[in-house]
Image 1 (tube, rainbow, N blue to C red):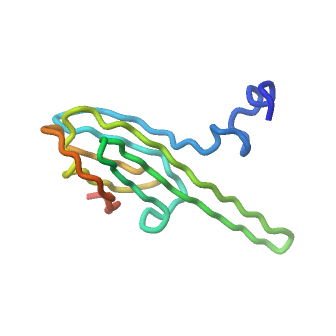
Image 2: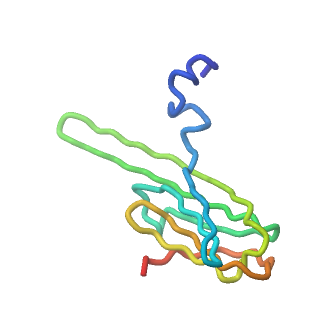
Length: 126
């Protein structure tokens, strides 16, 4: 895709922007929160959240859909990844995640930073 096509069709399936997870970050009441837009995924099977030793949180999701009718069949799939450097003071050992109505929410209390690489499980909202 050339530069003119990229401006006219910025979210074409062939553009690098097509597989970007939209996020918002906030800090309130001693908690750092990342909300990621991930509609149409099963958080138990399709979402992986990891944290490396340098404090980079990575959200990876895969989506596949197949629709078959009498007249035709159509499928869509894609892999999405977004990495975020956590701010200073995030207590990485206490990070939690939940998924509700297409929004993944990752929260971490602020305090003294720890550096433990691990995978973060996605739970149900409370």
